[in-house]
Image (tube, rainbow, N blue to C red; front, side):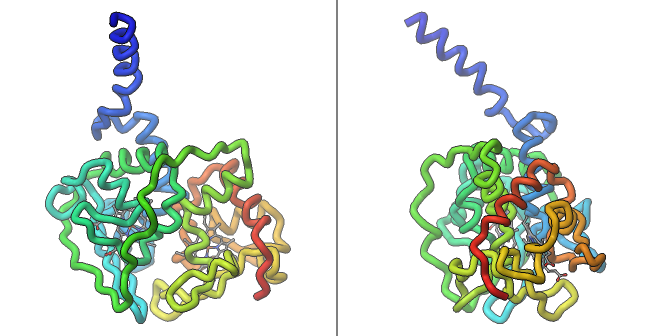
Length: 287
Ligand code: HEC
Ligand code: HEC
C-alpha cells in the first residue's frame, strides 16, 4: 500500500501543472504550445477574430467572433470562443471544447456547420487539442453576442465515430509531420476542389475551389500539387515557404489576405520545411 501511495503522490506531482491551467500561468508550456498553434499554423483567428476594413484581424478582439462568411448555401457567423461565460464558451468544460473542435459537436448535441474544418481537425493529437483549449482559456473574455449561422444544406449527423486516443506525430518523421501540420492548418480544405458540397479528395490539393473573397467576388485557391506546371512545382522550397509565411509569390505578386499568411508568419522554419516536404508528395493533379 505505501508503494501505491508513493506512486499516486508522484502521479499527482506529474499531473498537477497540466490540471491547473489558469490564465495567470500563461507561461505554462501547454499554453505556449497552444499559442504557437492557434496564432500560427491553425489560424483559428482567420475565422474567429473579427476583421478591420483592411482585412486584418483586430488584435484586441481575439476570438470574439461575429465575422461572416457567406456562400450560396450558407451564411456562417463565427461564434465567440473567448472565455466569456454568457456569449463565449466560458461555461463549457475543457473536454466539451475539445469535442467541438475535433468532432464538431456542441455540449447540447448540435452539430457545427462549415466552414469549421472539423474533418481536418479530427487528426489533431490529444496533446495539441489540450494545448489549444488551454490557450483559449488564457484569452481575455470578450462580451459579444453573435447571431446564429444558417445553412441551406443539411448538416451531417456527425463527423464520424467518437475519437479515441489520438497520439502525437513525431516531427522526426518529416513528411508525416508535414501532413499533420497541413491538417491542423486546414490547408487542403481551401486548396481542394468541391463537388456537390463535398471536398473532392481524389484531387487533394488540386486547387480550383471558389472561395468568397474578402473584398467581395470570388477567389480561386491555387493548385499546390506537383501536377501544376504554373504552380509551386517549379518553385524552390524557399520560395514556397516565402509564399506561405509572407504571402508573396516568386514573381512578387502579393497573395490575397484570405490565404492565412498573417498567421503562418510565426510558423518555425523547421515546421515550414516539413509542410513543404509533404506538399511535394501530393498526387499530381492537372490544372
Ligand atoms: C474556416 C473558418 C474556421 C476556422 C479556421 C476555425 N473555425 Fe471554429 N468555427 C467556424 C464556424 C463557422 C463555426 C460555427 C458553425 C455553426 O454555426 O454551426 C465554428 C465553431 C467553433 C466552435 C464552437 C463554438 C460555438 O459556440 O458553437 C469552437 C469551439 C471552435 N469553432 C473552435 C475553433 C478553433 C480552436 C479553431 C482553430 C484550431 C477554429 N475553430 C478554426 C469556423 C472556423
Ligand atoms: C482560407 C483558405 C486558405 C487556407 C486555409 C490556405 N490557403 Fe493557401 N491560398 C488560398 C488562396 C485563395 C490562394 C490564392 C491567393 C491569390 O490568388 O492571391 C492561396 C495561395 C497559396 C499559395 C500560392 C500558390 C500559387 O500558385 O500562387 C501557396 C503556396 C499556399 N496557398 C499554400 C498554403 C498552405 C501550405 C496552407 C496551409 C498551411 C494554405 N495555403 C492554407 C487560400 C487558403
